[in-house]
Image (cartoon, rainbow, N blue to C red; front, side, top):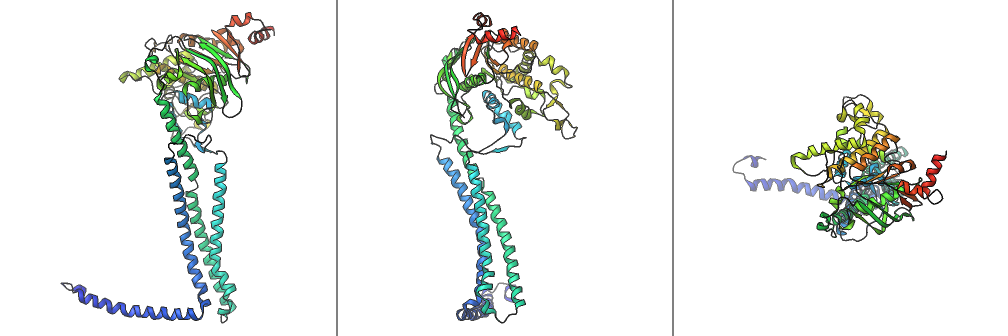
Length: 555
C-alpha cells in the first residue's frame, strides 16, 4: 500500500508485496487441504454427510436451470417447426384457440367475415372482453396431465435428493459419531431436516414457476400453426386467381343471385346441410324461404353465404360439394372477393347471435354501432356518405321512429345489454338498456347501413330508401321474429324498394303473402317454389304451403 501511494508507481515493490502476502496464504491452504485429504483417505465415511449436503445443494440449484433451458428450447423448437412448415399442405382441423364467444357461432362469425373491415372493428371491442379458453381434441388435456406429472416428478426427485444427507447421517454414519450424545445427534438430524425442508420448498417453487412458464408451449405452437395456415389461405383467396375483372365490371345490377344444384355437407356431422338447392332472386325482389323448425332454412342460407364469402377452412360450418352460384350473372369464383363482399349484406341468427353481439357492442353509442366499417372511399365526402347510409338504413328498418325517438340522446345514446352497466358510475357514461327486440333491429340496421355505404353501383341512390342497394344481395335469417305484422309488411315493402335481391328465411307462413316468391324447405331440400298465388292454386294435397295456409284459415 505504501508503494501504491508513491509516484511514480513502483510496480516491482507492489508485486513483491503481493507475493509475500499470497505465498504464506497458499501454503496455509495447501497444508490445511492436505491434512483434510489425509483424514478423508483414512476415514472416508467421516465426510459423507458434508459431501452429500454440498452435492445436494448444488443439484437443487442446477435443477431449475435445466428445466428452464429445456422449456425454452422446446418452445423455440416449436416456433421453428411452425415457421419451417410454411409449405405444408394439410393443417389440423381442430386446434387449441383462445376466442371470445363472438367467434363460436357461425351465424355471428360469418357476417363479420362478410364485411370489409368489420373484424378489425370487432377486435377493437374484443380487447375489452375476457377471453375464455377452448380446448381442442384432447391435446390440451393431455398436455396438462403431462405437465402435472412433470411437476410431481421434479418435486419427488428434489425431495429424494435433499433427504439423502439426513438418511446417510442416520443409517450410514452412526458408527462415526459414537462419541456424540443422543441429544447432539438429534440436534444435527433436526438441523439437516430443517435445511432440507427449506431447500426443498425453495427448489419446488422455482421448478413450478419454470414449468408454469413453459406450459403454453403446445398452445403457442398450435396457434402459430393455425395463424400461418390462415394467413396463407386468406392471401390466396384475396388474390382471386380466377377473377375476371372485365367480366366483373360488366355484371348486371338487376340479375341478382342464382343458385343451381347446390350441395353442401355439415362439417361437424355426417349429414347434408343443403341438397340440390336451386333458386333465383332478381334485384328488387324478395324471396322468402319458409319451413318448419329444423327443416334446413338457416343451413341453406349459411351454405349460400359461405360459398360466396369463402371463409378460412377452420371457420366454416359447411363443406361445399358441388353446384354453382352467380351474382349479377357472374359465377362467384370469377368475382374479386373484395368487390363481391361489398355487394353482400348478411344477417344470420341462432340461439346466441343477438346476445353475443350485444355483449360485444355494449357501452357504445348507437352512432358508433351503426357506422359502416369501411364504405366507399370518397375523400372528404366519405363521412357524409356514411351518415346518409345510417339514416337510410334506419328508415328501412323503421327504428328511426320506433327506437330512436324514445332514446334520451338519440344516436349519441350509450346502449347496453348488461344490467351492471345501468348503475351510475363516474368511470363510465350513463347507459340505456335495449331489449332483445331492439337489439335485433339495431343489428339488422347495422348490416343494411354497411351494405348501403359499400354499394358502388352508379345506379344506386344512397340518399333515399328507393334504389339505395341496387346490385346488392341481402341474406337475412329470421330477422322478423320480434316484429309485429304491420312492421313486417313495412319492412318487406322497404326491402323490395331498395333494389336489393333479398333472401329472407322465416318460420311464419303468413309472411308468404308479402313476398314475390316463396321457397318451401323440408328435410334440408327445397320441396316447392313459386309465388303465393301459384302455391295456393296447387291445393293442399299437392302443396305443403297451401296445406299450411288451409290449416291457418280453417281454424
